Length: 172
Image (cartoon, rainbow, N blue to C red; front, side, top):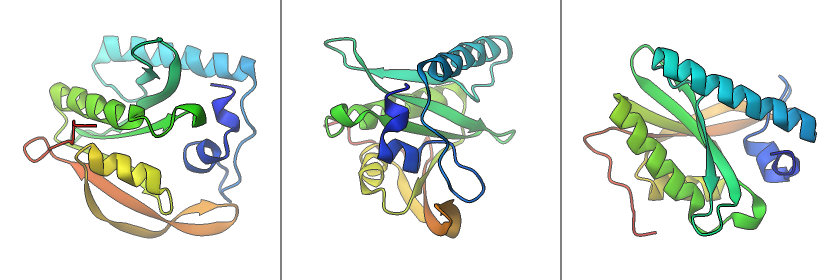
């Protein structure tokens, strides 16, 4: 977690930012442990309430068991609309981990009763756009000047999946 938080792509597209789009400092090992403890708290809350907001999964290599990334539920609305995000460590990118995780998480969210699942992706993050498409998400539009990075406005792309239309490319 701490190592990944220093990766420029993770800092750009997934990390915490202030209102001007300046990234938070990378996590120390102690900070990463605190974040992981919060994940455990979120799982206990989910067990008690059934609301998956904040629930996070580790993405692991099936052969070695090594952690290569994570994905988690950012929001679950009263209307049963879920948003999630994901990241993969630089050394594991391009191997299908994010796509597989997005498919599995989407399947789980639909099983929980989500009426809609969506992703927001900062324009320019073509790798993440490819993941969304392979995971069966449809591009719905661009929220112009919706985000901020390093003081500059940036567009954010919107992708969504509906349970009756969802067709992931599980060949990869």
